[in-house]
Length: 115
Image (cartoon, rainbow, N blue to C red; front, side):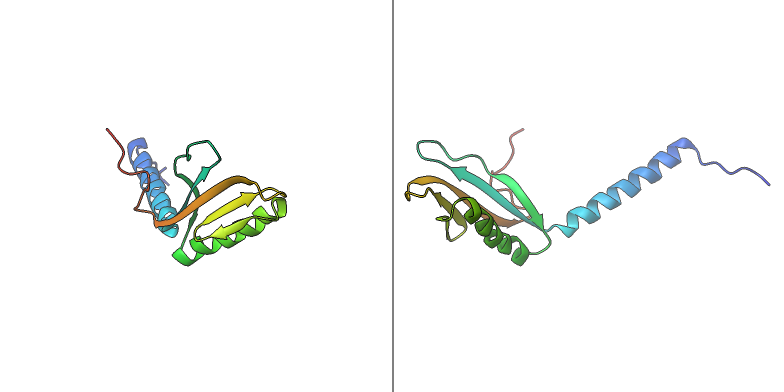
């Protein structure tokens, strides 16, 4: 019986194809991105950053409610207005606001990247 071995270039090509297929499948499963940015008194807003990825727009938006529940564990006076969560201290003083945006994974709120 003969030993069968694939040339290393062919093995590398097959592994690369498998990796690309796996990555594309994982990326396709997360079609909605939850972006966040934070603002504090006397400080500029932070840049948009990716907070999470979801399969559907509904799942992306429902995560906001869970974030509000989590925020209220530390800041009972936390409120949600639209797609933002505002944190206030026990004396109702403003602490910070987090702004959220659910977009398709093809949209980047930071705008085009420079070259």
